[in-house]
Amino acid sequence: MTIFSKIIAGEIPSYKVAEDDKFYAFLDINPVNWGHTLVVPKEETDYIFDIDDATLGEMMVFAKKVAVALKKAVPCRKVGVTVLGLEVPHAHIHLVPLQKEGDMDFSSKISNPDAEKMQWIAKNIAEEFNA
Ligand code: 5GP
Image (tube, rainbow, N blue to C red; front, side, top):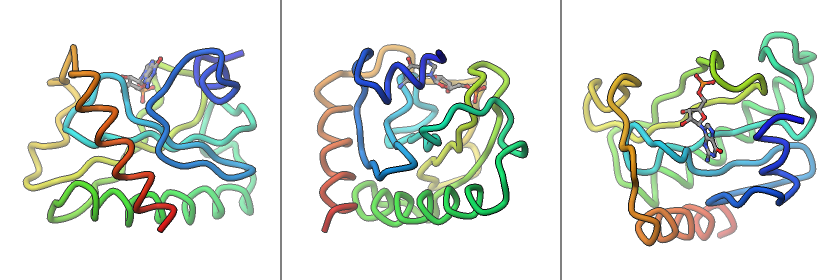
């Protein structure tokens, strides 16, 4: 079971921002920028391009809804999208609010993000998602 499956199952806490029957979105614990969100499929697949076409399409549409909510909750020029996936073997899309290109620099992360601030950001994104 991957760490993300444990998060989805509620065995490990997360700053959840959105969920449906197939996908789950939560804040990255070491964000590259405030509002950095991960979108994951509930069914465990390591490599995103091993996901079947229909599910991958649904995942991207779910990520779009999260990005729309994220952009309202954390004002930015655009929400950046990337897939790295070298660390956790459970496919995930990174969504990062961008004011400038450097806001998506994975070599510089916020290492101990303030828990109250993370909670507040997650709540605001969730409210926009569910609006
Ligand atoms: P990647 O696999 O895309 O290279 O990196 C995995 C991402 O997941 C990293 O940005 C890392 O900060 C995040 N991450 C790893 N473990 C956890 C965790 O337990 N909780 C949360 N919220 N994020 C995690």
